[in-house]
Amino acid sequence: MPNFPNIILFAIPFFILAMLLELFATTKQNIKTYETKDAFSSIAMGIGNVLIGFASKAIVLLALFFIYEHLRVFTMPIVWWSFILLFFVDDFSYYWFHRISHECRLFWASHVVHHSSQHYNLSTALRQTWSGSFYSFVFWLWIPLLGFHPAMILFQMSVSLLYQFWIHTETINKMPKWFEAVFNTPSHHRVHHGSNPIYLDRNHAGILIIWDKFFGTFQPELKEEKVNYGLTSNINTYNPIYIAFHEWAALGKDAFTGRKSWRDRFHYLIKPPGWKHDGSGKISDDLRNEWLNSKQRKP
Image 1 (cartoon, helix red, strand yellow):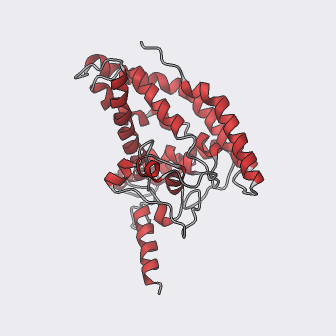
Image 2 (tube, rainbow, N blue to C red):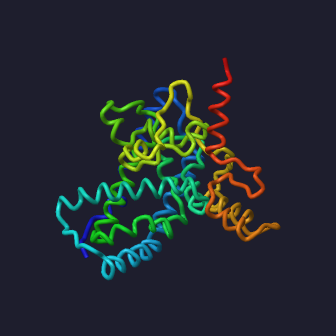
Image 3 (cartoon, rainbow, N blue to C red):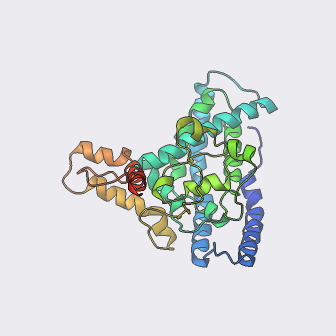
């Protein structure tokens, strides 16, 4: 078992320092991006994610090791060029995990946690799921098939998570054009956290924004459309328990109560958030098209 450092734990002091610096910078500029209760809710979600991660990691390792030991097609050596290949493979996996987490309600039920804050700052990056780590790893199960050691995979996943911390800020407007063209940036990720119809379900990148551009989910931040953070229907609470499980409760109610066919019950699990079996719901594409049509009708 290769011994890679747990860089997320080592990065915790950096997270704290960076948040304090951001708070100082925004306060000095008279920009209110932090709200005390909201920030502490995000931090509580992050602490819960780390603690629960000790249990979920055992499941993830077991699954990855089983595939690696019994089903792998190749064996990748643990050398520098393998990590370059793994960087792209992992980032591609992250894009599809993140995109499906917005397009399938079963995955949205855990991912919604990260979008539940109406503020956007470095503490928002810590607002992580308490349930998603038990099943979201399925998007990475194909990687050990290629022969990448599970320890390498977990390490690269941590690298990706660490990268995504710094992009949760309003203190950086734009990076250089070449950087914006290739990498995920604060501007790109602000769009992702927007509840504006034009911004919904866009920019699912982890590190590389190229996947969004290739698969048609890229949306630049518009000067004329200030980002409104949060959900299309905000939950307005600082309670970590409610933040963690409110969508699971709503999903269970929609899927398993009332008079519905089994087909409709199943569709509540796999259809996008907002879908209703009676046609009364609106998914993000519907909201975006309505917004675009309203813009076109204006003189």
